[in-house]
Each structure stands twice: as structure tokens, then as C-alpha cells.
Image 1 (tube, helix red, strand yellow):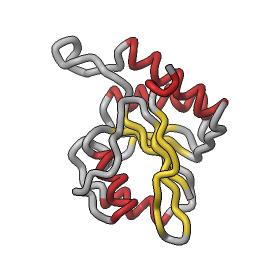
Image 2 (cartoon, rainbow, N blue to C red):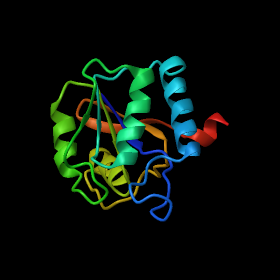
Image 3 (cartoon, one colour):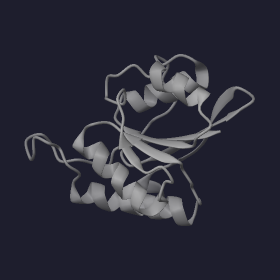
Image 4 (cartoon, rainbow, N blue to C red):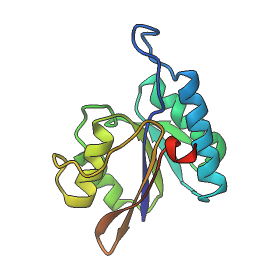
Length: 154
């Protein structure tokens, strides 16, 4: 079982746009990451779920354009920056679907920590804008399989 955790791509500041859509650099970075994920890593996901924030929705849709998830893209509750990661951590552990979750810091880092070591307060993964973090479960234990960031593709 695998799950992919993605922090939204770089967004405009609140001063530039209150809704905080993706910046041009953010769109470019996540487009490159999506193409790399589909063509070089052969990532396949059943569904991409994102928080209700504009920047997460835009990131998820760009990823979906390349990854074509069989169950599409959907907004989901509980993926906000300060939400409790245990809800999704427990759901991920019980599902047989391959999910990609698109959200925010500190949530994505806390979710990775909860899955891998059972403690969301311990920092084990440095999540980056537009980075794809693959976690894998084998025999009930989660581990970090790989991390890819836009800087690695430069």
C-alpha cells in the first residue's frame, strides 16, 4: 500500500491575492513534477484528494491532468494546515486504494510522522512546496519510500 503526500505548489502571498492562488513559478513547478511523476516514476493513483484552499485545489488538478486518477479529484475535509492528522492516518491505514493527498504545512509533515512513527509531534520529514512524498506500508509498518522536489528536477 502506498500514499502520496503533496504540499501545494508555491502560491501568491495574501498581499498579492487574498485567495492565494498558485504563482506562475508554482504552476510551472507542479507541472514539471506531475509530468515527471507520470512519465519517469509511473505513479498511478486511484484518487487525488485536496483541502478546500485554492492553492491545494489548483495543485491537485494539475497533478490529475498528468496522473489521470481513476476516481478523479475531490475536495476532502480534514486536510487543512492545522487539522488533526490522525483522522486521515487511520483512514489511509484501512483503505486499499492508492491515494494522493494535497494539503499544507504543518499538516503533511505531521501526517507523515503519524503514519511512520505513530507520533505526529515528532518531525521526520521536511515537506516542500510541490514535492511528492511517497509513503509505503508493508506488514503494518509505514516507511518513506521516496521524496522528490522541484529542486531535484532542475
